Image (cartoon, rainbow, N blue to C red):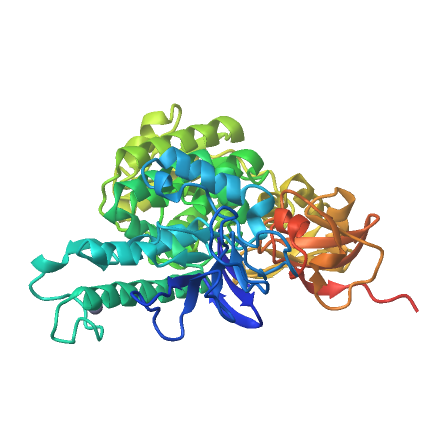
Length: 571
Ligand SMILES: [Zn+2]
């Protein structure tokens, strides 16, 4: 199953017919026939094989049928994970029309559905799913929508687009070339079919975005059409970060941080929080050098950063210098973390102008950095971001004078390090490499990560670096993943500290680990993390988490860990 945050592509099995979700269940009556081949939403007494069926109310006089198909009582059978749910097979919010009026109610409904036992069940969204909202609603974890809002809009003369609704009669040239719009006639039927067409197309785009891990970008553009959606996304980001972050993959897709909401994306906010919670600078790096970001990523490969690094080398004290990149929306990126998602995976519009929220964020983070990391010397070598950063620094040198790339500035930088950095105390060769790696391992695995670098050697050609002790390889940083992939020996060190562990029943994993064998999973685990498969403190396998710890707890089927190495069977 493919996922992007709470959104997911699943397969819904109704009477042996499989439907790929997110999907629309179309009302199917004589007056409003469903499009051919579509998933149908029927009354209980009219439902056929493979239909979603609205159960008859126990108070109604409607005839009941004994064999049910997929009951929306609603109840569906089949979910991406569960074998079968005998009771209601759908989770759904109450009073959907009320949620459209009230953001707080909507948020409460989402966190109720997705923060508890219902997480895994297919989630039904009634009344809300117009084309412009499908991306956002899928982002909130809805799997199936009904066609009621499409019909209601057509009845009211609304021509639906993915960026909002237009008055059908007022549109001179229809901005669409679907069969209904190209028919040369204008009537209710054409309008309804256009609305169907638009919703179906948008849902295809939503599914594609989920499978590419790019749904958030689509959401940030689609919410513009309605204040209700902007409110909802902001409230979710700010008040329910923990829920969204739990489901955000640790290694996502490259994205464009082009809106105000990009500042609070779950993966962006996680970066900033994780720095504050886990970060310790490389021990030997006693001189802080703040530099600007570059459009090219990783920054190291950009012309501007190559020049900075040359200036640093020319000082003869490069091993003492800690380069920290100042950037939006991440705030700060210490050089040794520049490969870690999303540090090399974001693009921003460059205007030279920092807005208030960005300034405040950078000011707070720079203050945190200098107060918590205790440097001997602080050098600011910045451009556009110089003013907010310098405003919070107390004892520091400014070597850029606002143009960090100029020859004069670079010479000033070399001279400042040469003259003011403390004397080198002859650190052992490669010591700084180990310090840098320790800092990255801590960022990835928390405190237990530091154990990987205890008496270790780091070697290789950046960005691919191996960590070894006594000729045993513990892990390897790769440029592609941007994080450390562990060997079984490295995994055993994490197991000792009970960090990033997936506890299993007593068996030897052969191939990938499925969720049935899982007893317990560490709360710190995110999809995409390297995890240790453990039984009774013994590291039996190591691989990449494919589910969140909550899913490992609730799900009945599915792959929990994609195994890289497993312990050989005892002979
Ligand atoms: Zn059309």
